[in-house]
Length: 335
Picture 1 (spheres, rainbow, N blue to C red):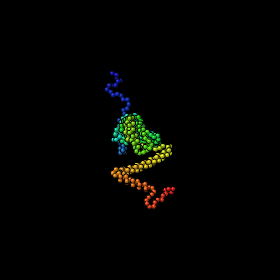
Picture 2 (tube, rainbow, N blue to C red):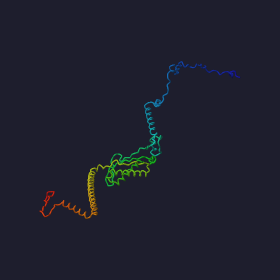
Picture 3 (cartoon, helix red, strand yellow):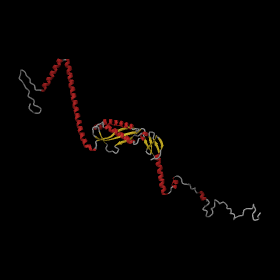
């Protein structure tokens, strides 16, 4: 065994001075200089602990600065937009249709419904309130021809209710189709009525009922799924460019109506007179049949009384003859 080799059980030689053992730092004393730490004092222990921000403060802490504030406003508006366009609450008497990118997707009923936000999906609500179509929409002129060839400025209003929202949503441009059905019904009715009749209330009511029925038939034929509540005329007027001519025509028609009234009154008077004479003749005929000789004598006396009352009289006899003076005519002329 080599004498230079250390024995096996000897400890390894030391390479340097052993580190000195340090006691644990006291929490009541400040730490060594330069380590940046300090033991907690009594003030620190009594001070309330600092809590991390929560809620809106935490949100603002994530996005500090003006750009962060702008992003926060945009995010809030986006949340409001998604909420308003994705959550739908329908009343018990309402229904709706959902269209995805303009195409019909499905129908929804009363209660809470969720959809994708607009413009991905849109909801059209159909309630108990009837929808309205007005022609002309802008309040301008709508010139049409009546059955007697007169131009008339006609405005009408159609009220309808969507009875089947699914069928109504499947028809492209359903509102325009229903407007066309109403216009066709109005034009067809105008071809069978004159202007005077159209302006009168009696025939106008009949015109509106027939037009509503024709509009409903057209909507059913096209499968719109609507119920036409009414079709009423809101304006029947002469075009402004024909106002003067129509005034003269109306004056002539009023004169014709006045003459017709006079003719009817005279005819009624003649009829009454003829009926009275016929009644008197029938009474005389009944008396003649009961006593022919007596009736002939009475009729003779009545006739002579009438003739003598209307003419000058000449009385003859054994005495002097006396003639009455001739009566002057009413106009002052010669007798």
